[in-house]
Length: 460
Image (tube, rainbow, N blue to C red; front, top):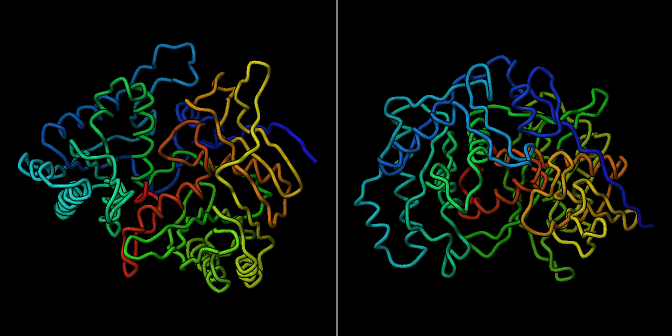
């Protein structure tokens, strides 16, 4: 059985119950999803850490963007819209504030110490220590919602070899501040200065302000759900090797509701199977992982979900299936779906004689339990393919589903739009796995005895 069809682009919900398929268009027309919610903050208080001159440039850039940014000159007007800015009546319907004492300048001498350190790992470690300490001092002096940290100049992109192989400034700084309630936003000077290797001015503003709004507790947009649909908990499971040891552990991201609310938990230790060379959890650990996710859902909602959908980055062992199903049965759920989402597929599609990339939403079924989904591809709304390279599809292996594959795949498309770092339809992974992978990259640097911050915002 081989079958190909194109799924409808799922809609999102914005302010005043407005709906749209595209994040920026919906925000510009209706405002953010939480615009009518009680207790919503109408001011984002920002702190800044970096060189004094860079902090001044950054604040001026943010104030200028808040007034609006012109669109790029192009015929692709839906792909490159203007940024409307943000005031009490447009954009994110909030204003920016820079409280007194919310800036911490890193001295030139400190930058010299970083540059003089031997080895990439020492340079990055030293920069992390200095910036983390400045963030802590800032938070001791004033109350802010988000701290912007300007990436120190001259840092290597990552560690190529040694004890911290594969580590980078972003993950190590997030790990160093993982118990801090206020999230940070790491930013490069090229974000406000522009240049040939960065995106256009309006796109950069859209992405930055969306991230800041979400990190400050806002809800930019939400999944559009039918009233008749079961309440559902989404869980993403990925695996990462710890820095402190050679052990694998599971990192878990769970999405509570259509607003994208959720928490981060660190799962049990995993073992790499000799049979398939993939990481797997023991039956007891799999059961505990899902049981903990359900406990956290009940703490938030005072009730249990009717169903669970679990996305995993590796195959399901028999023990894992039994453990997850045991947790679902114990919670008396109406359904527990287990999906292995593979990151690479041999099956590739082309569209037409000119070899156009497949449309986003193209679903190829190879068998009853094997499917290929193009979550990244040509987008009719944009009238183009918004990517630089050949799109790679996601593989979907179904081990237990209670709905049609079309409904399950459409839901995955919706979950790709809960990426608060990208305000357009070109994210490839659903937020469940995107966040679980990011969490793993950060928590590998955090001692197991530390209780990490539970909010997504601290890992973005």
